Image (tube, rainbow, N blue to C red; front, side, top):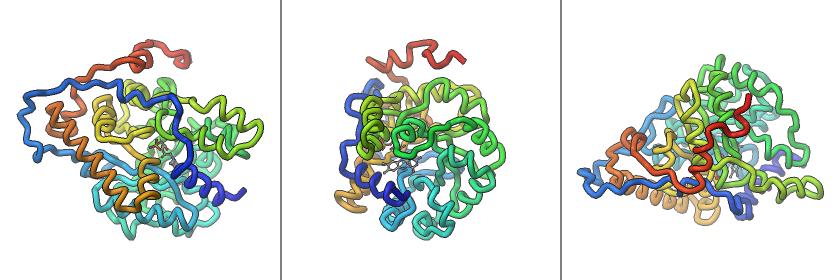
Length: 355
Ligand SMILES: Cc1cc2nc3c(=O)[nH]c(=O)nc-3n(C[C@H](O)[C@H](O)[C@H](O)COP(=O)(O)O)c2cc1C
């Protein structure tokens, strides 16, 4: 199967297929804010703007990495990047692997419709290991990226027919990219999350920006399980709920030393309340992937705009109701961790922190 066919499957499955986690949740609903009955704020004066990766966003929102490499992907990227530009959000391109074979692939070129928005390039870290830092830099420059995401996706690859199985040497390539690329490097998971050990390894190897992409939204094991057959399908079914909930990942990333300059929260973000909770936990901004694709598929660009309008409206309302005039105040808003999130955060030494 070609990469283009695989991309088409991914878009179809994510637009309409049963690829969400069945039971695992982001646990953002376990973050309880204290209602502020005396906010002393004017709702119209709430400031949602924030700095991320050297650019100012109107709100701490990204349309997270999804696609590229096909005509349909080109249309999706153009439409979503134009919305990000108009609205002052960040925009992530999908994996640029197809550009290794076709450097002029037009499906990744969005600067014509999004000249100023925060644009994130994307390549798998395993791929980066094969091609080296210089080629990663070429990929970033070819699309005019402000930052480059190196994505981590071992769970998905193990289920994908013909997927990668060797995940050695990733710390080394991340270290080199963080050191040598002229733009910021974001280490990004793809829906299984970042554990305490992984966060600490990333921080220790000089990575300053992380997208935790935790569990509770799109399950990429589920996406590949839907495509897999026989043994791979059985393995995918067994691991369908694998991953660390997004809320826990954000808190783990927040604890890592040296501290990350930015923490992006993706994985199951759907609402303004989710974003507010992510920021209170330590995120700098939050990203939505599949909900945006579904809105685009269902209702076109207007559907995406109306989804993001609702998200922003809800974020502003929550900010007022916790008494936060701006994102810096939201970041220091007290909250009560409840339920299962307490288990994830309360265990002082999770089993994988042994090394
Ligand atoms: C159709 C689709 C394609 C994706 N492709 C990529 C990719 O190429 N690179 C990447 O880093 N993440 C990719 N992702 C993962 C998302 O960026 C995000 O981390 C993950 O889906 C969790 O967010 P969600 O629950 O909002 O979908 C993709 C997601 C979707 C829905």
